[in-house]
Image (tube, rainbow over all chains, first blue to last red):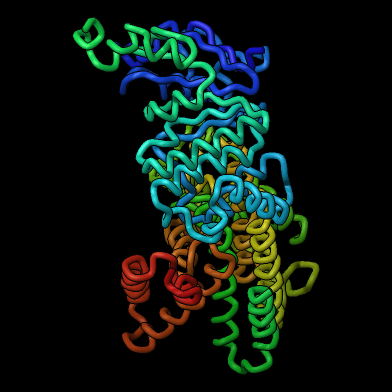
Length: 241
Length: 311
């Protein structure tokens, strides 16, 4: 069953067409990946789904309900939450307070939200840094914090924008395990990622975006051998070699 | 618990203070200091916690003072009713400015400029209109008595402002420990991330500026009852806007006690400069400016940052 259904999304910035007639679906309880070269329009597509940008055409449906152009906080309340590629921590707040902001979506009490934040922190392996200010975290820490905060809202669909970029191989393995456990808990995941090894091992379903268009869609094996995909990533000669 | 103890100790200090004050001068000093602590807290809720820096907080203060004065003098309403309406008016002006500027996504210096512009417009209006006393200002007749919110014994004014400060600080304390407060901080730190986590940033900021406007209007109401006079420069002039933000910035923006600490520091500094350098007008402002520069350079979290250890 498609939890998320984006149809014919178009987004222009002046003369530049960032996303052009892109459609994709994310199915319940699965991990769907959106890959593609830099500047392909992946983050723009995410921003449209999460309500941060208005599309110039097309529609976004979540659970069969039209959420096209809905304000971000309302999209989030329905159960769709995004993380940011360029991490956006609440710098002066501690890790615990950062995560609690997410928990507050369904928990009015401050004490209970802070308590729940501890549980989420354990889930993503941040329990040792609970009282650290977010601005003192390493890049890996900040990526985890993005994930933890989003998770704290108890989403049904999680949009992860390059949560592995800039991490060491060990850190990537750790976060892959975390993402898998989130999926196993029943959360549908749509992720943008450049770390191919992680994409291939995690994803049930992959979409490839190039110059604003979806050029391929399939399982990891199909995508890895798709000539168009190889060309988009490595250039024409390699593809035909 | 430690902070609650500190809070209680400070309250106790202010409660017994008049017992040790013999001169009218020092009673006046502490009364005005508490007045600035109240005005500063109103700014702090919006600017310190919410990160929406207002440069025209006089617009709320002046509305409190003017509405109360006009209702008493022109319409003959009693002081209590006038005070209640004046506070509501402050909240309303806050909601209006907030709805207008936050709806159009004004942030940072643009928001600051809009608040300043509103204060200036109000200043010009009350200055031009006979009903609001035009250039002469509004003079409330002196009629001491609790029914008129006027006290022959100045100690009562001291306790009145102490009560108001206590209430304002208790509210701020509550805000800091609520979901509303957490959302305000989140918006201050990163509005986009806040929105992504389900926060209706517009509504939270609107609530903050409404509360802030009401609190500043309370300060305005106190001012008019205490001095029985307000004109356009005092009510809506930039000096009051600067006073509103100076105390929290120096004491520590986004902390409950920051505005009080800042108000005490500023009041003491003003007295010291006039003691050392004489009473030339403007000397204390010069000293405030220097203090602000020093604080911003060495203590970005204000004097509270010093108390908490420089982390």
